[in-house]
Image (cartoon, rainbow, N blue to C red):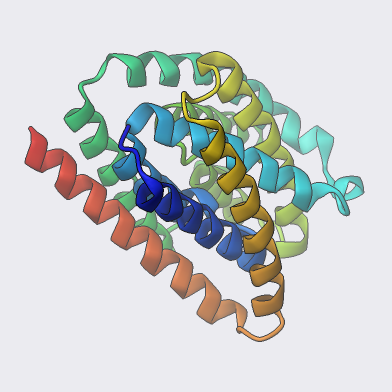
Length: 243
């Protein structure tokens, strides 16, 4: 891992930016932060730190809305994710860094383009759809740190409203990130980075809540997708360059 105050400051800014968009839109931390964290820390520690930060954000966000969690609907999603997290961890630990970067960047880019296009997957309905989305989310979260898009696609196809989606997505985020951290262990980063990440989460939360009162939801969503697409393409390019 690279060292120095400049890198530490950069990582703090990355976490702050990711937390800001998460509190602004209810989603987006992983899509925005993972590509940048992976580029700076490497695939293993970058994804690991993203798992920890994303889980913490979801926990903070759910504090006031846990009564709205639909446990019956979430059970197949969570069970499926628990089964595929170990597979994602195994794959990520055995791929060379350039290959893993290419896969992560390509995955984020494809998912963002799919979300931008407004695409739907009709198969993601009912219990079979929940199992499919949960399994995909668990594998992607442990291997690449981006397990949210399959759950978003499932919610869209299931007809969930935004009010229904946010607390349930946060509940899923807490559990799947806990699974991922348990499977891989904590990232090997210094104490300063943990402190900067905690500060970044707090500052990002304040910024996101302030912006939420001023930025239209459609504009905020476009910003998240644009940042995510930029990060995905950059990570893909770095991976392909190293092959």
